[in-house]
Length: 247
Image (cartoon, rainbow, N blue to C red; front, side, top):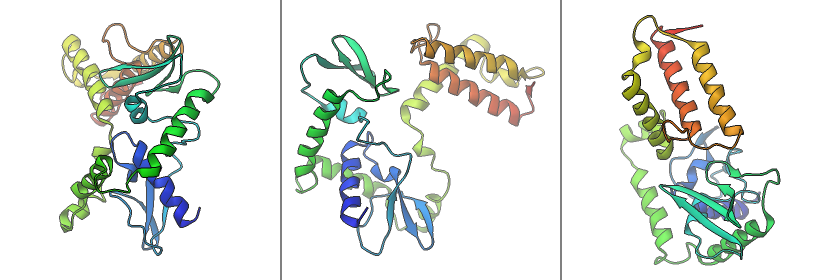
């Protein structure tokens, strides 16, 4: 891609990133190495940028942000969601949600995807072109919040960025761990002689099977099965570190 095409793609990411941090999907070349970006790019010709392979493919994917903010859909479609969960329904059946994307073999529903592509084109026609644009102000403020000339903060930005963990992930995994703490006690896996790895592997497979069978939430905890799998992984990592994980 040439310079202008990269800028246009970044503007689309800026429009659709759920948390207003599109630079998370980009790398910049600092000296001789490619490094993750921690603020908006400065579009000078002598600075190189490229989009990470893990960034969303907007030709096939939707952003939870654009779905949540959509106030008009084609006939038969509707947006549903609560407590941060967003989904698209067609004739009452869920066809897309923010956790899994498209819920059937055909990767994208052309009618609804084309509808959102047109909305993006209309938004990009004016997006960021005026100082009064509230979205443009929000992106600018987000960049200012993390930009700093403090050497200590600049050094910190090169270390592990724990802020990249999605807040919803932390919230749901914490809820699962709290549920376990109520039943068995906090950090119960560190007690006695330790835990059996196979027991937790089996639990992970039970949650995976439930997901494959179409069940989203664990009936006991009320939290997503994916959150249970993540919590199980966290427990095994901690148990291994403390010498409590046994085969």
